Amino acid sequence: DTAVSQTPKYLVTQMGNDKSIKCEQNLGHDTMYWYKQDSKKFLKIMFSYNNKELIINETVPNRFSPKSPDKAHLNLHINSLELGDSAVYFCASSQESSASGASEQFFGPGTRLTVL
Amino acid sequence: GQNIDQPTEMTATEGAIVQINCTYQTSGFNGLFWYQQHAGEAPTFLSYNVLDGLEEKGRFSSFLSRSKGYSYLLLKELQMKDSASYLCAVSDSNYQLIWGAGTKLIIKP
Image (cartoon, rainbow over all chains, first blue to last red; front, top):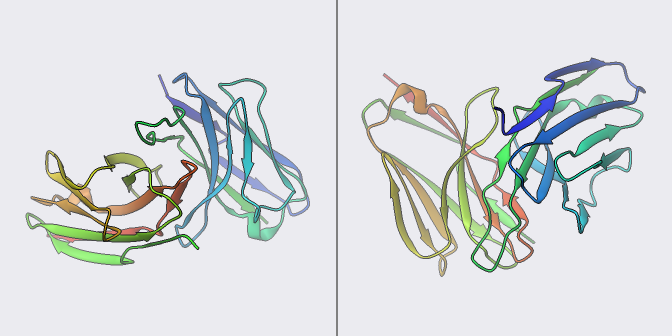
């Protein structure tokens, strides 16, 4: 039973296309995230989302939009794909953090996006 | 601004001990995480420190000094499978994780 799953694992597409990546978690967590990891392996937060609040990294282009049909899903939709969007995209989830401390994030297997 | 610094790459020998350092400057502090990431795979959780001191978990230990903005991950009895990137991440005042760029650890026989 996969805790955090993403589909597809690989995505190859042409510049200008619109694509979506799906993410589901079965851990009952409150918060979900999308990360981008580029060729230099730097992990960059794009969005964090729970049922109360969407936090957007202001450096993320508005071509990227998260969509959450319910607490267990957070999909990533990308419009007008560009060459620079090529990267590995990770979904993650965690329990909501509290006064007792921050919570561990569980990562999906990643989606390797290649834009041609 | 917020900043996490860790060495880009380290090399060690199988069976030896290696220490990976991480220094941070963040707006607030709600704990520091270490994650391991093998090539082509997702990061996986190794340790969490929120109080000063050493946390030991098998061959891996993690240390935190909040006053110095400093942590290290200590790996003992290195095995070839420990070859991976090790990511340091700090939870800030909003519980957002600020990530370091990762340290690529190469283990040689």
